[in-house]
Image 1 (cartoon, rainbow, N blue to C red):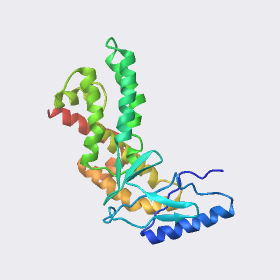
Image 2 (tube, rainbow, N blue to C red; image 1 turned 120 degrees about the vertical axis):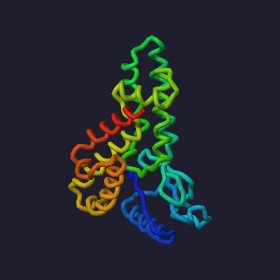
Image 3 (cartoon, rainbow, N blue to C red; image 1 turned 90 degrees about the vertical axis):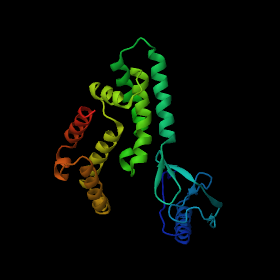
Length: 241
């Protein structure tokens, strides 16, 4: 029997050790063993870089690491919660190159974009709606998607790329990410699990308020028709070029 994808959150190393001790005790009673070679510890906070004592188990210590992957998301140790897009971008480029090499030069632009958006793009957007993002994160997310239009349309000017995206029916990924975030937050707020609704209520309102402020619309309008709000914003953005 396996119990995968378990995570323990603790405000201190001492508390984490107590939690691990308790888990090991419970595992022993149900004839399970902790695999410390597949388990890792990570610190996020002001003292993340300080050396500290290892977390001990019955079969050995659990190593401290600077990054780890949980449910396919690479989390990086640091003063604040941060995720790495390196694996997502690598998978995206691999998928894109595989598609483009098979199509060759004699192919339809729209077929190419449809295949890339349906096969390669999900690799890049994996779990993006569930993690916090800022301008730096969005720029890192946008760059691979821009490279697709550079390659397919043989253009390199940023304004021309935006026009290519608009007239081919695709959004820049900064808008796609926000769109997915709004949908995700709305689903959280309507969850049947009262615990999820309670712990996420404050964050939901704050995140939606920031997104509404970016698009210069009322939060109620954003909630009711976020798709139209974002598409109309992008259209006005292109018209201003």
